[in-house]
Length: 131
Image (cartoon, rainbow, N blue to C red; front, side, top):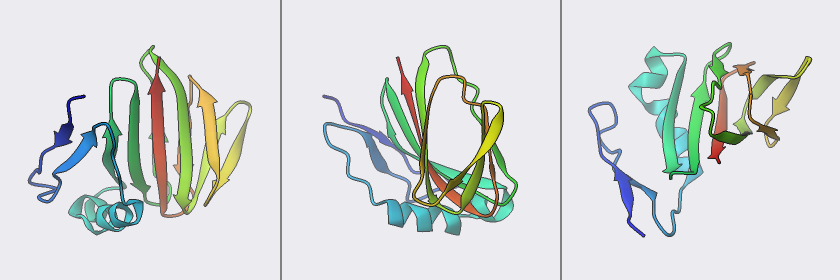
């Protein structure tokens, strides 16, 4: 298997990291701290970092400020979306009524996932699984 990595950028000068390999180990606590210390978090309503990306799976750590919304408009090949709340609280619009997603909760939905809105500063782990 070929190992793939992200390169550092101006916005993330220490951003070199393996994102796809036979084994990928990630320190979630470190990245939670990192994305909340970056300038993008200070200037915008969100910040994120891709932790793993293959042809079939993408895992992204996302930090949202209060009232920031995240919309999931998927390509046709998206099969399953999971949202795990690491810290904070999200309101997930799924079906006829919204659901609260609290720290430690996991939400899983087959395709056509709509929107989640941060009730307070929130960190979530977003996984998108493609067919």
